[in-house]
Length: 217
Length: 217
Image (tube, rainbow over all chains, first blue to last red; front, side, top):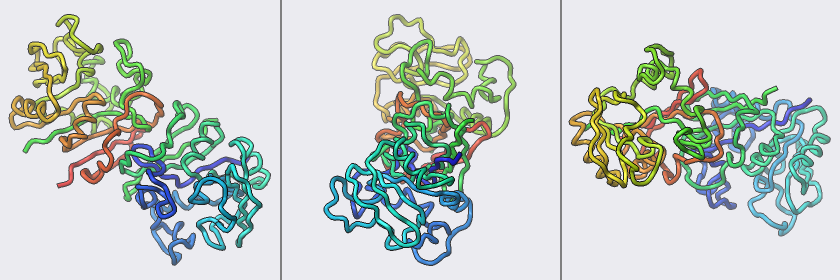
């Protein structure tokens, strides 16, 4: 059976997955780049082409970062990860943040209350827009993924809803030692999560704490 | 200058320092013993006489635990740590949870809106009951401590108030990998704390993540 996985999702020490005031110019709100600061310098993230050359750090942070796409057949993401504005699409020109050749190279299911036709870009990435609850979205994603794993790509609300629906098998969370104070909390409504997951932790010289949540069998 | 220190204070992964429903039979509310489970088996905690013989683990958890009383001249604690019931004292028979010879062996300032006469027990522990804001309580505690350090002993509200008043120099927090979902949050109202503290982390085989917060100079 394929697994449903989360990778490289950062939260602050006080549990916020995104800051307050998310908008086009500030996709993480008042958190700025602080939540992803550990990931950006890694070889994995530089190789996504967002930041130029194929170089970058190859230490512990990259060990965790690099696992994100291996064996993945589809990603499920929330509307907020795909586009900066909520509500009906003003037009269908917006193609995501990632340019003509997005780093996914798989189908991507975008959860939205405002479906639109599939969007096929270069390199194997096709966005499918779906208005569905987590379990139904996962069923559709598994059709698209074949035997491969499913990644839940975020944002905070999407991951929390899949956790609450008990649909996640493996989750990597990076705890960043900052106190955001406001924003969206990842951990709301998941009391007792440790009964369903073995939780392990390791620290990185960057200051981040990497956590793995592995479903108990 | 002496330091104001916090030691061995546990929070859940979602930031609760105590669970919901705190009462005499359940001092940590629905959290039960889970928040302190890492500390109880250590040599330091068994030596406090709460659990019998002077034995116990001497690994990483005890390294952190054992620092709690070295160089300390006074503790400040909240009323909730001293006694299970809020409000006016029904009588003055309650002498704390720790028996005739408490493990502090220093003066202890108990913050309460209902002062009562000092309570002197064996072994050098005297409880002083004070109705004061954090800065004033600290001034009184320093008089009692001489040149030694001041420990803020908890509970959650007391530590948070001293953090918000920027009165803490050194803080050890143990993050326990459980999701409590409800209770009292340590991290409310301390946005940007990382600007005032260097934060380091290390994991323990018990599963706990030990954090040190050291005031930036």
